[in-house]
Image (cartoon, rainbow, N blue to C red):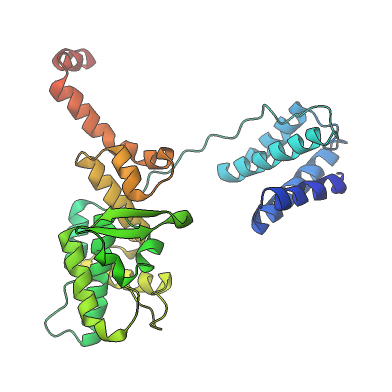
Length: 307
């Protein structure tokens, strides 16, 4: 199928666009698959038309490929045929008008406010708890309070230095994706839970709020997952329903349900693009309907017409 052209395309992705190795390998497989399908019909990428590519993509759906895999395959084809046209290997781009399959974005999973309350209560150490058990529960309490109160990513939480709590009162300084820093509000409860953990960890000499086995490293994600699993069982919740990301989603969902603004939520979550935050707009639908029903001058007429 013109492997020289494929190799040149993949080299361009690596050199000019800095594509990841996994992406390059996936695209190589995608192009090889397309080449085999076209060859079976006596075609090559240099003479295939738009209809041929549509037929190929339709076949992917028939094979049961997931929509996301189909979308990635189409993205690969679009970039490859654009490359062929720009390099003068084809006079046209037959993939220019092809469209990706519709992707239904899954709604984020979240806990109810009652479940969060039960989960936090489960972090309270028993009176006869051993020092190790007590520290483990205090660490869980501090982490869960901070994840739920501030919507932090787990990577942001575990990398927090102890000095992060020395920011302006009621705030913590967080370094997020791409090294972007942001100030995030921290509730009095979450701050108290963090200080309770720091008090019993003062002798460890770690610069991290959540230290790992070695004091020079933060706790690993796997280590935190084990703590979260234990607390979920203690609270009577299914551990499969609980993750740091679920707590972040719960933070966002509950804020919106209580009237928070989507733009404010974007800043709190550290989203560079408001489009990322808009996955939570489903939470606002009931509130918007209630607002119209309560305040629109024709709401009674509208309700009667609906009946």
